[in-house]
Image (cartoon, rainbow, N blue to C red; front, side, top):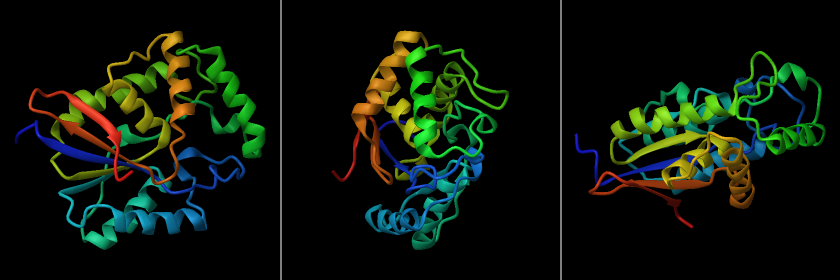
Length: 210
């Protein structure tokens, strides 16, 4: 299979209960809101009618967004655990908190800029997250067929774009710079990004259907 001249689309999931400020729950089990389900149906109709493959994060909100598209196209969904969102704070440390209460805790995490900080036993460090996205680029992205549509998460897709643009993210300065980039990106739910592999094997990253 040729690894050049390919286009892969990455789609952020629809609005989740966490996005809407709902109470903290285990990251993998956060569901879509009613609006999120409507967004999933809407984006399914904007995506290509005949994708070569559908891939999704195993987290519920990404899977439910992908299911709307799978129902429309008749394809199954392949899951890839590398696509799961950055779980930077253990949910047990935030249990019962609303989005407004969580926000300053998350902001402090990014301001400290320690890529090896682990906020709870079930949390992931930023360095581990960065390495996971890098593994996907070096192993999985190289093998995805032209026309694949991938459903995932905001920070994950943001870090993919950051890395494909040749930026570093492993040290404290890189971590803070990435967060500034994410804040400026302001990626809405069901945003679509296009990744292209050119004839030289280099990747481009850009919004799709703007």
